[in-house]
Length: 170
Image (cartoon, rainbow, N blue to C red; front, side, top):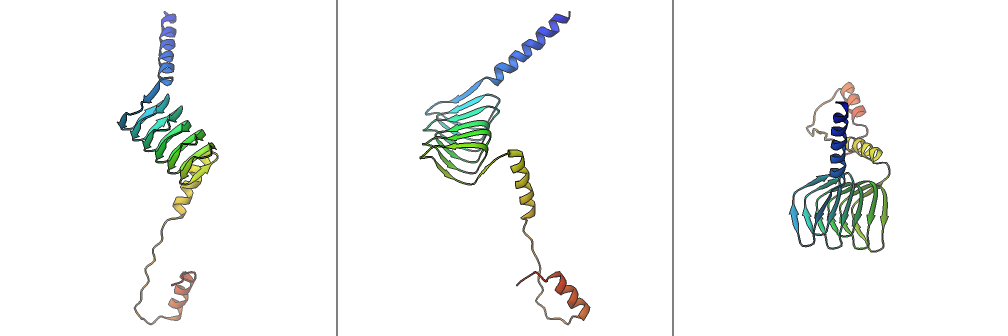
């Protein structure tokens, strides 16, 4: 009676392990349009137009093209990526890699010959995201309306206006 429940739980765990160990491959000459979201490894040797999210490793071949963002635990890039990369552990840019986008990673290895055009941030990803989030709210655009009509101001109004706009230069 109790043994059957354990077997069911073990079977379910084995199924989960099989799914998480599954690999996704896009072969040379193949083109895929759409996003990939997986627990397993991803290997791209062809062209992907879309984003990749993997809880494991993403690898691209030297003739591959990815037009989209890559989010993974680890990544090894040999081909071209037109989009951002977010790698929680280790990003390796091989000598044939061409990156057009921003990189956010904990650690990175760049081989001689790799091309990277974008912004790179390295370190603890949670802290970097938190910092970027606070910077984006503090860098908001501020618009000030300035009236150019001539009017007579009292001394009190003039003092108030000068103190409010003392740092404003026009």
